[in-house]
Length: 480
Image (cartoon, rainbow, N blue to C red; front, top):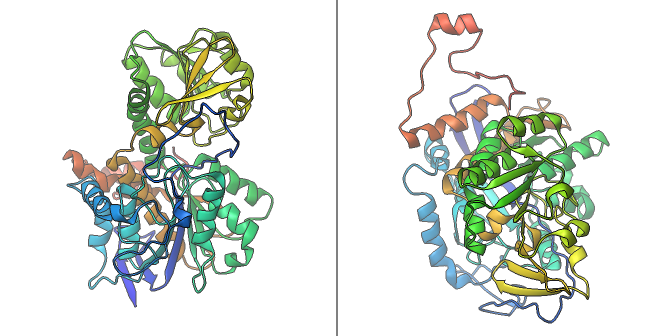
């Protein structure tokens, strides 16, 4: 049985999804949890201390092939999905509408729909004929009514166990990977390399994961085509710039109740995420400093009115430190020791390696949990810093991502999966590719009706003058 998808651009043509297209993915940002013993003053709370791994749960159809916190929250999760699909905020529904009738809903190895916006992507892929297994990558962003193999507050061991449960199941073989951070790809390479014989492609949406793919490609170890959706314009602008411009304030307010006016803030990194954070903080009256290694981004920061500094020049005076680089050891123990009392430290970059949290787990320092995702780390002299989400991604751990942004990024991922799966043999080799610009523009066009926006169309004469097709693409594939 097939599902025919008619898309308004030749790059995709009629996409055919076979029954049995198995899509396996880790969603959201890459996280790790250092599983070390904390001082006795470190406390946490949970409604149920029993590990989900020790529970025997079944859904209403008797299926137990999942591991979540509480299956009883399924009804609440369904209402969350309905909110995410409201109005024009979820353009993923456009993909469903454009599929030929009758649509075929293939059997899925997952629980009943249990949660929020990303579940809309899963249901859309299933409606288009895919068979999905799901694990989450952020141990704090996961809501307990979410996903298939995930729960809030996973340990490092739980994290990898969930990925393995997704991958290692009898009678099931993935043929596509949708990854965020590269952990799933890494795990399959490490534990189940023979699976790549039947995998047709990888779609990756994070800076860290894309770097890993390019490293594999350079070393000649990438054995399937991979699509880099992180560098698509729609993903870069909305998931990184516009989303972070709002969520940085939301995350800080929810966790610390801080007032931004007059606060001195240093933002490490002036990429798209850093630009969004700086713009929001400046608008709220904060004094913003920027650190940057790239001279082009550094010059942009200067032109936008921010003072470019080295971290050690301002570390003693700032009230808030925000990392946005995707790198490791951006803020190290030496910096943490020099911070003033009450300094707030958080991460907006993809990886949790930006802040050297491990260096704070020493006998002379005391950890005090003051509220969910907020720890006071106390020095022997009484100085304390406020560490948010243990150095993990602030906006996913301590706030929410707007459904509109998730709709854009998820639509991009869905189109990338379909393109790789249906590409004729030879179109994509064992390398990393950017999302075709025509698809990028198509994702944007799907979301314009949300704003009652009306595009101007080129005349034949104008299109000929510019050397463009009237229907696009309007930018070269390398444009960002």
